[in-house]
Length: 152
Image (tube, rainbow, N blue to C red; front, side, top):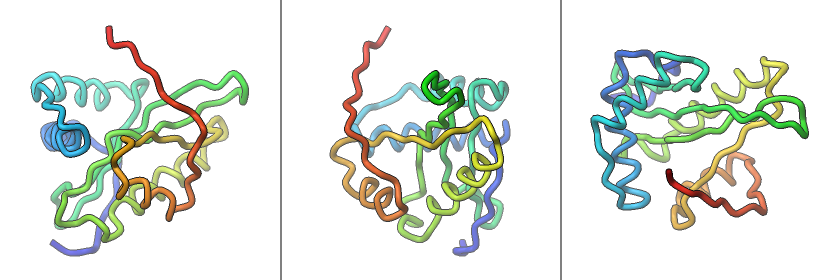
């Protein structure tokens, strides 16, 4: 594998790999074991319907080595969309080699070309200090919000 990464929008043929990435990321960051068939259906739900979002993948030698998901949030304050960057995963042996940077820059350029997009957001697990450092180094600002959830 080389450090020469190609970036593209994810396609249905990427679903299995993306589901595996999501399961690996959940285990690494939160020690959560996800149900792979459910995650695979969820990934396919995005890939089959752009209204749900889109994946961006990094490839090296035609193999997917990193990915992220973009979903949408409407902002009534800004009368436009925020794109949420989620499910970020880079194969461990390729971390700190620019894969996420290329993925993020691709998304940022795509967002800047869409007049309805007001900004990019992401969240990170509190103990994932490596990711937090990466995001700070790339110029993302930490926000003063806490996140709450009720699972249904």
